[in-house]
Amino acid sequence: GYKAGFALGDMESVTAYLQLYAGMAVWGCGDKLTRAGEIVRLHAKRMLQHKQVVSCKNILIHLQQATELIGLNEDVYSTFLNISEEEFFRQEMNCRGAHTMKLILHTCRMYLAVMRGNMELAAREYESNGAEYQGGIRFIGTITRVFLAGLVGFFVARKQTSDVEKWIHVGVRSMDTMKSWTEDSSWNYEHRLFLLEAEYYFFKGDKHEHLASAKYKQSIAAAKKHKFKNDEGLAAQKAAVFHRHYNRKKEALTNFQHAKACYESWGAEGLVKEIEIKIASLSQ
Image 1 (cartoon, rainbow, N blue to C red):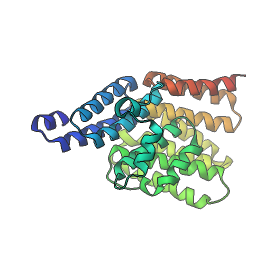
Image 2 (cartoon, one colour):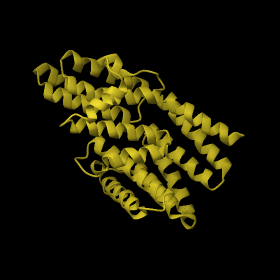
Image 3 (cartoon, rainbow, N blue to C red):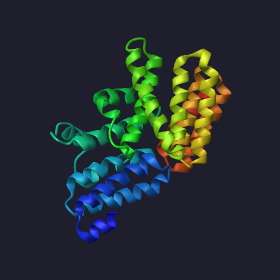
């Protein structure tokens, strides 16, 4: 797609395809993250060379996310644009009309927070732009936002005593959307639906503990079968948190180790280091 666009001089098509690839590379496919990061970096350079600054910025958001997942200490905004990440974020949040870029920024920040297990931060990101997380054409950004919103909704509902109905509504709406998508393509969505269902039953409490446990196992198995290594790791990490909640130390440790192996295979060394800390705390 984008190569044909370059050949024809159709930069609008080129930018659309490259932005779509950047999202797929990090959020969608679970392919080796280091290789995906290299390709996204190359695309960002091409956009800058062709003076497509807005598209370059959109791609850089994904590149920064990949860089942090990989565990590299690089501010890609400084590398490409000579400004800091903080300054980039401030400028774009205050820029009128930068709707797509704001949405990508919030989604990437939310994704990083969820993958790191920092659900409180993910909830703050959701609330800062929550109205955007439940609709839109079924591109990878929309799919990711719906999935993340569901995880956040069930987590906050489980942790809070106020606004529980609000957060359950967020979670259930995401779960219902994922269920309808799974009917169209079980390969792409089934494992995410199982994880949302697991988190829903975790929220429901002790009487539904066995259902939650079964759904975590189904999510891990489906993600593994369908080769979504990133989501397999996330499902294992969520299962570990679930078992730790019920003081099943052995099961929690097994799942954290599973998550670590998935993240190592994916190339997300930044996540591996954080999982190692959790494993060490359980091993004491």
